Length: 251
View 1 (cartoon, rainbow, N blue to C red):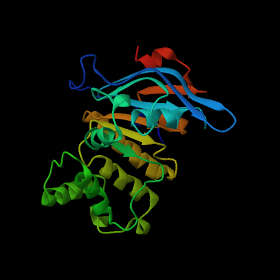
View 2 (view 1 turned 60 degrees about the vertical axis):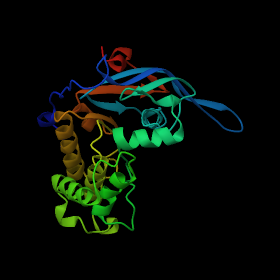
View 3 (view 1 turned 120 degrees about the vertical axis):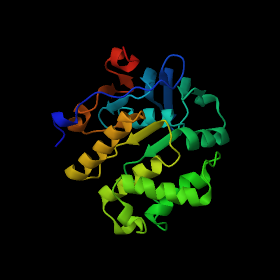
View 4 (view 1 turned 90 degrees about the horizontal axis):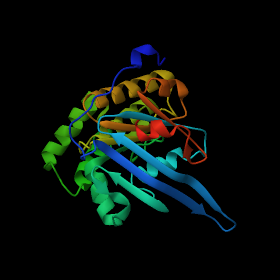
């Protein structure tokens, strides 16, 4: 399904920091502790991702892929090391500062969609705009923008449906619309096609390609090696370390 037709270059933007990196990780270590021992999920990770790059992180279960994504999203904090995203030193932020920063700079697409079941697809897309500290849009414009985003992902006809009444592929496209609500520069996706059939996965991936072509930066964790082959840049992680340091550094 993901053949040569999906391969291609990735757009670059002139926005970002002085080095052109939207994401910079320096010596990041993440340890988890339980009653009996300490487990090292990430072991001294150095990573640069430039504005407009489409990057796939691959590796076996337990290799550290999702932990890496959570560190970049500010969901987890590193045990040591530094994390810079969109010009901010996020591992030094308070929880309130992180919440505001995520609302303006980050869109997240989860494997299991994470749609609020009591809200329509439209209201799920509106919600990030209502919660964002920046409040870019007034109430009427928020709903208009949400409809525009649902139309973009092919769901305008399902806007008033509850999540339980649409398919998994439709839910994931709605989740992408929600991730775009506040027009963030960075989209992170954790196994976004893991619960989808091949055609739905194809449609989601084409949406990702379009977003990158428009200048978004997209970081995707995936088990799907066929899907990863169609991504311009691939990073393999094993036991909390990158297998190819040059790829991680963007050399």
